[in-house]
Length: 268
Image 1 (cartoon, rainbow, N blue to C red):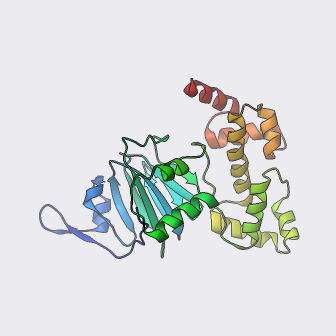
Image 2: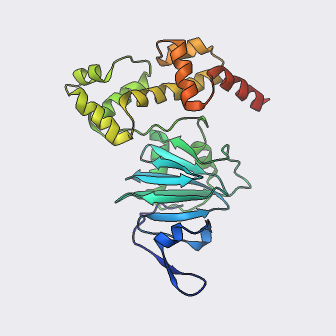
């Protein structure tokens, strides 16, 4: 579907003929997608009978599904399985793209709202569709590309410019890089305070938390390949196996070993 810049406000008559503002509509129960509730600042709780992928190439969008907030950005998209109630809040000058897929031919590997990190390939594909004005729903190639990734990946927003972007590019190439924010700042001839502030402002995460999430995401791929937990920890940059296990449990709710066993059980 074509990406849309959401703007303006709406009023819609209720069953009695009175008009309902978008603030009132937010407090009502989930609406069907056909109700078309759209407001300048977002839309109230509703559901779709199809799978939907949301992406914000510009600005910031927050989608709330089943009580959990999910932040969309140029580097993070969101899958919404059919039947999941959700609402959204749009930041100023945000641009929102929505891709829809029928449930019958498209088997979504997620059962709840799931963030997806958007790399260069996926971003170019989505922006190309927006520029071309393509509206064909259910593109099989696009569906495959947008579901290509580990379903347990942590959201990893990327800085949009400056030294912070340089640091993330370096860490993406080598997550095991042990340089601290201070050392990165020295190498880039900037202050560590400015670098840390940029990370927090542009990603919503502290530098150390961003790096930890990157390492954990990379570790999922290595665990799937059958590497031992200690080897995975060292490969992605944790200085101790125990530190890796603690971080893994904090973010995923289980140990790497339990994760591997669960993955093998589901694949059997």
